[in-house]
Length: 142
Image 1 (cartoon, one colour):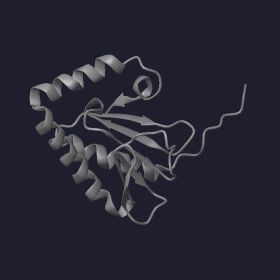
Image 2 (image 1 turned 30 degrees about the vertical axis):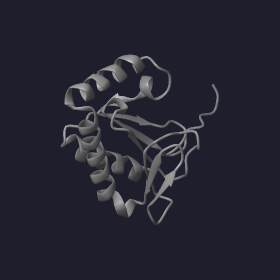
Image 3 (image 1 turned 45 degrees about the vertical axis):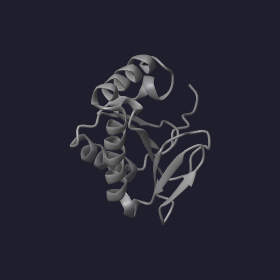
Image 4 (image 1 turned 120 degrees about the horizontal axis):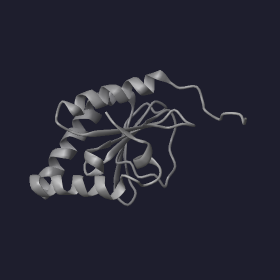
């Protein structure tokens, strides 16, 4: 049997993910969660991706990843980057701001699309991606 490449887990990252999940679920947001196997990263997708996602970690991620929100333990001030779209990076001291921004982002999306079309987009994302490799096949609804 081969050696496992699994790193010891940083429980503080999981606790941050739990806090974000509780806060946004209180606002009716559906949360999918995936705890990475080889890193200390946790990914949360909101309303099947229609309200974007957050990556909680202790290191910078791959440039190819496209999480709108990022909570990083290894930075000491929050900032915004413009790639193809805005990406938000929060230090752990700004957890409340992150949660408020996630909730506001969801409100903005519902307003943009209207409640009925927003619900349609959620259902479409769920159906189209349920069997997709990676996040969608490994994540669980929390």
